[in-house]
Image (cartoon, helix red, strand yellow):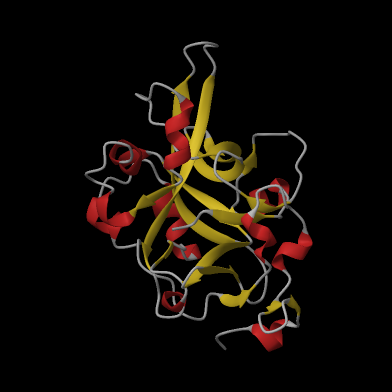
Length: 240
């Protein structure tokens, strides 16, 4: 699964990268620990063009009784997108990209859970495949946009930590994925595969990321698991 990520890139820069228009001018604070129900920068296709917006992380189906259900729908399994009541409508016409500088996964060893940070080796953003929806709050009449990240089986690189990973779309797949008029479900499903092993660098980080109250650059510093102190990425990278 993908339950925490970083979004440190300014939405204006995200708009430039994805050739989109920034639709939300709210003040942006970089986050090193984006958690479920937090605001999430997303890229999607509107009728008048490609847009960068802020959504709630955790897709709230239009038929939900309350936004609480969205907290359990932060991830959508690629294998069940066409059958899941929560995601099948969005898969057919409300697809988005979640741009992230990196994400966290945990490896369990006995009772211990060690967090790892996974990110592009040369920096930049990952284009996570996502879905979006809008839900109308019956109490206020306001529309709440929300999104989920699609996951697939882990690559051989990531499998030593976790059995799932986000779908990371290559640049040449962005337009197809975002196009709401693309109805070839077989074509869309063909994009939902594990990323090549050279896309990510992986290293252990401090358990401080376990708490949503912690949010700062120290969370992505490599950890020497032998001493519990910060180390250089060269010392702690698991895969070359």
